Length: 473
Image (cartoon, rainbow, N blue to C red):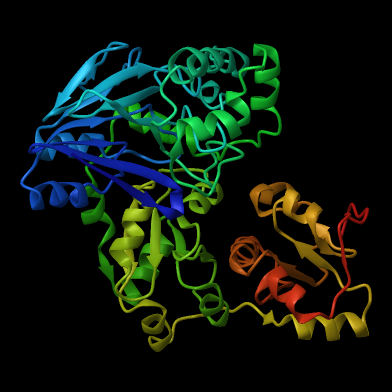
């Protein structure tokens, strides 16, 4: 028997490969399915099942392509009603895989169809629980997402279902079972997830607030619903794609990997409503870029930020990447449902510049240079685009918190006529913020290299743990 967790850091997502005696199952696969197919082939195994724990909101699953290419059966738990053929497993149903068995545990709460898969080894021992978004390490799945798709599925209703799912289906299981969740720290599907990617159920019973046996249902609901931030806007759209179906990843790749000369790229930008997305490093972008392009670096939390910053998943996109990373960018966009990349700039920004095309740039200064500016002008305007929670915990004195997460509201607080110096934690989000606003006519924003990390390390600033009362810049 083999169990392998296939973790994707930028989505904080765990897919799983399980194999026994020449048969394999894939749990919650990503959109690009070739790695799973190759893994099974290298082990001389046949993929028998694609097991889905629920209709995912934060990424588009690869169940359709994987089933099409391998003949595997797609399995969902009870109540799932997608627009394609599946095996709708009953609660308590046992699936055979080689010499092992997988028991279906219907655990509604995160969503109504949410299901966990209990692995029973060759000796008949309950060994591992693939808990999806029902149980995380240190947390449980948020019960407010399904309401974005079906209004009648209120967060209170789902939180109640989650309470009973945990107590009746999961907590009675043996303490030595290993819990393998669908997500880890950094995912928007929960709020208190641990950095650990697996744990024993017994340890979770002792440390996970939601598994406290003394909690009443009302107290449980209060704790689970407390402090939930609004989910990214693309979440319900991804759910619908996972329910209704989508284009094959092969078609998406074919469409997105059109190499365009500088002239053809410029024509496409002028003749369509395509957004120019530049995925290079923030400081490379700052030195020069195509006017009106947006920077979201591929080496950061690329897919989630794309989902937050580009509201329409059907938005046509033109890519500027480092050479050789075009396919990677198209795949990572497709992971969160952005299937309409229509081409990339052949030769990257270097080719654009060599062709004599118009360019733009963003001023970027060091923390030490900022300190010198403040010394000359104590009323220098500084924007902190980190999340409110980050800002409150530690920040520069006399700055305005304008979170990137709420860029439209933050934009309304900024006076275009005045110069503002912008920082985030390390320089990734500030460039997203500045490039987005620059494309909207904000030309007086200056980036602070290295963000708040560089500010602290410089030792030239007074920091506070409490925000200063500033309302308008």
